[in-house]
Length: 227
Image 1 (cartoon, helix red, strand yellow):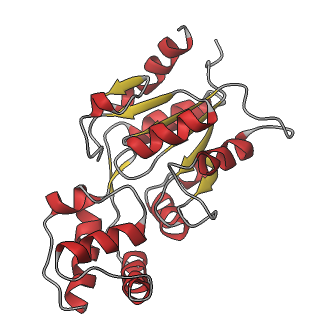
Image 2: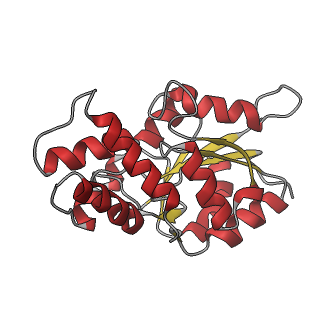
Image 3: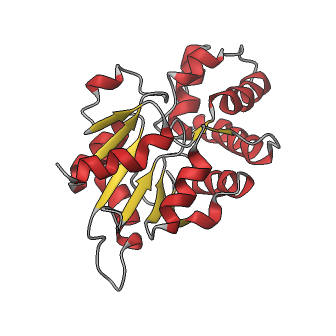
């Protein structure tokens, strides 16, 4: 029996990988280099989801004077360079590899739509053995816009289509409000993972489905397709 969705687009941080420990480690290196105090992982978790530039801005605002458009650039470059050079790969959430592999084997085309920079996102996918599963990848710097702008997700969906046609049926899988807003903007259903970094009660995100375990995704999507 064919799977009811021909394309699925995933967020990265808080959906496929638990990157908060890595981001905290790298961010604190940057804070130290600019004579700022360290942040806890709990603090950093509340800052994830809007891209690296916003993360750096929030971290500096929390540890002293805020950064303006001019002063943020050298700090951002330092953070991105240290992140790309970091040798410790983020941890996959349980069930991610097996579930994505099973979906791809059923003919589902997989895409990634994340506000994390594309270069770092691709490095992580490769390090975690997932790169071959994704047909299209869009990072937060791939386009002039990023989530919650629907054009970010729309760009990925266009590339998941076949023969110039958009996917017959697609869905977004994420963990926070940016994912839900982007999905609503392009008119596709959205699944929220409860274990990520929602920054608000996950029940208030407005997702069509909320899941506690990634491995439950295929069955949940089949139920969603039945209405």
